Image: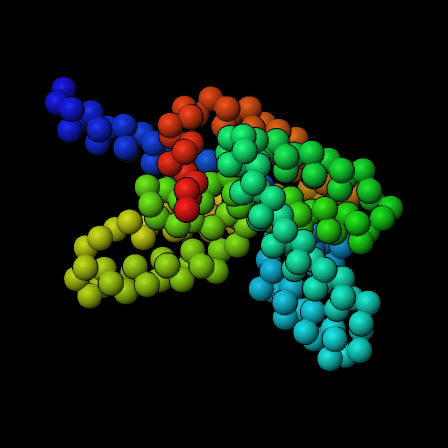
Length: 225
């Protein structure tokens, strides 16, 4: 086997592992968002939706809800920042462990809805730092508007004769989030607030899986600048 062929094989394997991890994390994000929406009445990972909801709440003089939602937006930003810090200081899989702890804390606070809401948002912000790109192509984990937009633009270029098919991977996080949201909604209907323990356990399981990924490969899934 030539060096060039071996490099292509490794790249293909690394991409497959990265996409599987993206799908699993997006599944977790979709599950958590559905549970948050059904249990708390607002999104915990879809900040575009919460931005609109906060604006409407303020216009309707529902100041308490508007302030809470704006606090959630700030918490999401902080979660992303902390996730990157954890990823740089330790390793990307450490972000998943951190998220698992946050989700467990949120599940413990079933009687303190505002704190639970903010902890879930903090976790969903942080989880974005676990995988940021696949072979240089950006991917979103807790939101799919950008992924669908990139998929649509890639489709348009393909129709116009530009045969680059890298855009196809953008459907992966959407599929993961859709499947996760369906599962999360079903779980809340079946077991109520206890369902929030399941994302924590899932994040812990993902941590165990991600630990097995070679350090060199993990470093290719995050941005260094």
